[in-house]
Length: 165
Image 1 (cartoon, rainbow, N blue to C red):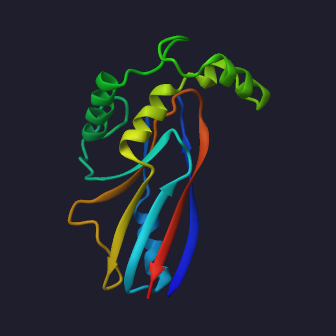
Image 2: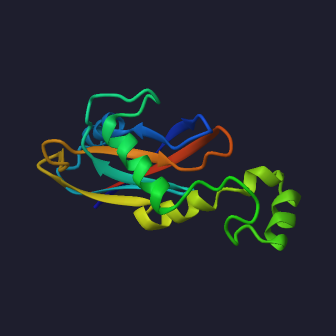
């Protein structure tokens, strides 16, 4: 069995949820792997981010998101409102706030509870079969890295691991 691990970088803009299409990069990695049968795992090591598979709805809202992405963000806003002030959620507590400050995070940067909750619900990875050297996403499937953390722009890392024969 062959195992290949690579990383993709994604830059979030801060201020709102960002979606990054990584489909082409993952497909290229699968093609270069020369694996004909196996699995591709797409994983975010960030606890405020998620990996999803969805279609590209093409049309864009004024925010720059596709309509489906905007609907996604709007639904999550109703279920888990964006953390806008201290005390809106129990997290971060006083001990975490001190710990975060000791590790370079300012207090506003800790107000990302909504991002942690959203990521936990969606999950930080997807496993996609590789059959006959093709990533099995279906006719309309696209892979998205979603950064829910609105507190500031960040460079993120997505890990791709391809295994098979």
